[in-house]
Image (cartoon, rainbow, N blue to C red):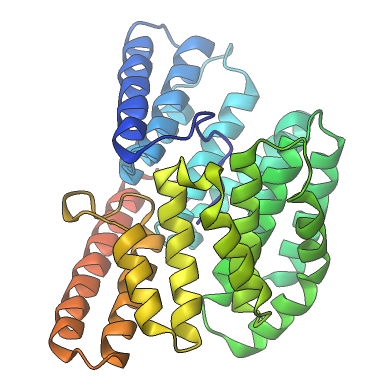
Length: 345
């Protein structure tokens, strides 16, 4: 659910996607092993961490990001350090370790400001804003998001603005999923300006199709959580039917999961369950493929549908799957936290 900045430029099927990032990981590890401390080694370590993210090895992602920070050298550009800090922070956020992500994000933002890294500042701002939001500081989150959007708007090309806006929407989605009614009302109110901007930007012809679909997915999910229907559901259905989404199995799986949740929310459980079974495949041998949080969302929506459809035995089996998934997530979160240096724990 976290928006990262280095998605593949060529949407593909699940197996092809895995092969692409597996090859990227091998190349990055070889480059890191053969390079002396400094720019080349830090860049290779960061590339390996990003590959680990796409391969859903989140603990490995954190470890490679930390290796960049540990491999200090006078020749290492500060932008690589900012990249490693934000990668580790976003990954910890995906694992549910927002408290541990906060000092990493804070250091990334301070470094980006100090070194005047204007091409990295919008990402550092978005990272700090997302963590502030999930930790309950909505006023600070909104201020940081506004600055991130302003910085991204000054960058060359339209992609930085799309990334910053996706990070705004995803951070509000994370807050809404915490289930606090008072905070939900505040988020839905303050997100209106971002929703209006997303409605406009998603139709910008300068965006690659897959970027437009990711933005539309975020918009549809946020609108659904804020009760803006049928617009949220319509946007998600359009996104799922778009060729750019159909060419990217991971994106299609994610969109189908969100759409199914909204269908189930209005009582269309048979339709939601059919959609999950047809589109949102999370094989048991790769239970986290496509994101731990999305998988958990799919499992929970499936369980809800089974209960509502009067299939208690299957619903009970689904409850065990959810419990197993939560245990795995707890174990990985703890392992990632143990990997952190003491000052970040």
